Length: 284
Length: 253
Image (cartoon, rainbow over all chains, first blue to last red; front, side, top):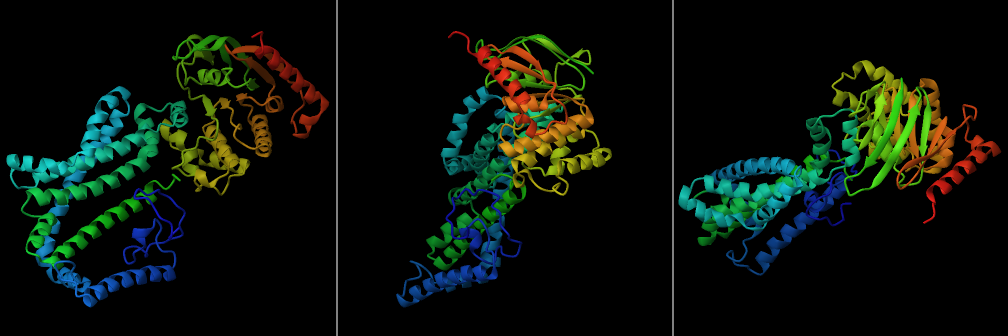
């Protein structure tokens, strides 16, 4: 399974014989759905990473690549650990605050709306085009508008993140809730289940795998929107650092921020992968 | 206990599909009745009407003298395919009715364990449905149904998806359970042999609109064995019933 290419949207619940311990310290979490199965495999994955990064370093040195084109990995690393506390950490905190607040609002509304709307097919028909509009329109576009009204605080960014993540969560959750298994609903009803019981014990668990997929896609969209919004309408956050460092041609710092953002994205992915395994592994 | 099934009539909402027409049946307590017919003859519709999951257009279903208006605690249902909840393990699936009914399952655990033993599922309590074979899943759903001790059991083509060997095994099990518990069972099937093997009474239905073509009483001795299904007496009944189905479902058209 480790050599198999995967889609960006994972399927959950492959039988894996993995225990914890092969998580963040090797790269297999990025390339495959299952973590490395043995220490040998982990060592192989790690050595590939070493070769890649080491190769980049050598190419940069041999061809004397200027730092404004691509800084040496060693320089990025130096920037990362010398400037992390002072230059990046305060902005990382801001980015995370915006992301979490916007995402929490958007995802909550998204799930509730999906659960309600799928009960009324006609309402769903009316609302779906607007939700699609929200999904396909980049919400970053709203930020300058909101900044005019609300200033450079966190509020415009939080709104943009909620509007980017919410519809994603909603659309996927709605697919889950629409997946009504009439036989299972009849089963619950044959025991005299109320509407609320049917929802809590049948419809919601049935929808959960799709809800988790929605939450994952929503979180990643939320992150992109957070950084983008910081770019266009903010004085703090990691997005502003990207603009700042590139304008000063401080490429090592610039790339260090990119590495931080990439790690954030991977952690989001891995978190939801774990959640899917834990709560939706019944689905094959 | 008595199931009185007075005149009934059923229409679906998609136009005027005549699913059932004026069905009159009596189910005596402790009786094993099979409802037999080709696909689309309304036998499942009839069963769902009996269970209170469907409303009837006309007529009524009486259970213990009171009309069935919705799901009743005295009725247990076994569905096509096992219909287990895939996100619950076996134990939790079996205790699902208790959860819905808000009854503490603890006093019933011993009974459930006994049932699991009887159907050969002891030791599988923590397995998930996908880890079990089709036959095991259906056995689990039988335990789920018996766990809260309903008086009347409605079975909707429960073994249709199983292979022939597993089906024989399940039929023997159902006969055994019926002989031990004396439950009233109404069993829908399109398999003639299965119907005759199991039932005291076979109700043959014909389609469009769903009607009762004939009711056969089956007096073969019990416990019946799979070998018995190949005896001349048995095959005679099979042929009789097949003739009825052919005659009943092939009017001049």
